[in-house]
Amino acid sequence: MDLHVDRFGHARWGARALRAALGRAGVGREKREGDGKTPVGSFPMRELLYRADRLARPKTALPTRALAPEDGWCDAPEDPRYNRLVRLPYAASHERLWRADALYDLIVPLGYNDDPVQPGLGSAIFLHVAAPEWTPTAGCVALARDDLLALLAEADPGSRVIVSDDGG
Image 1 (cartoon, rainbow, N blue to C red):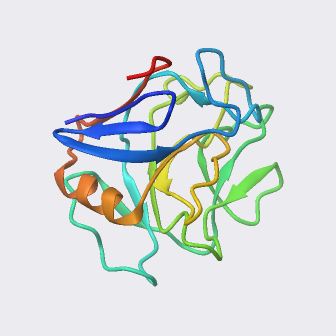
Image 2 (tube, helix red, strand yellow):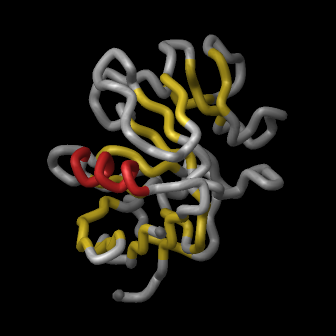
């Protein structure tokens, strides 16, 4: 099953209507590193990364791995590990995945700019937990924690996130 999201943050998972937070610059067909856009397209759900110190292993058919405090994601376009999981400390620019807030308690890296990686076209596009006040993301798709857990229970390795630039 696929998660369909429109540019207004209306999402649909099967028959369920959900709310999604999107990038602070909206959605776009042309994505660049740091532009704040959620990319338009169809992206496979690669795996689930989760905080085992905060929740039990979620039920899902996706490949699953517990996060570690040393986990990061490289966002330096010139680095060979750009748009890849890295171990911290890491010399190049990166995002720390082990956060004090709950936004990355559940992370599904999406298959955006990863096969092959194109330097500068954007990194760290995830499906993750939305902020309590539904603030925009840096380019990810975010859902309420309970909605994300329900989605994960039904997701499989063929599931995708489909972001459109229309109104639904």
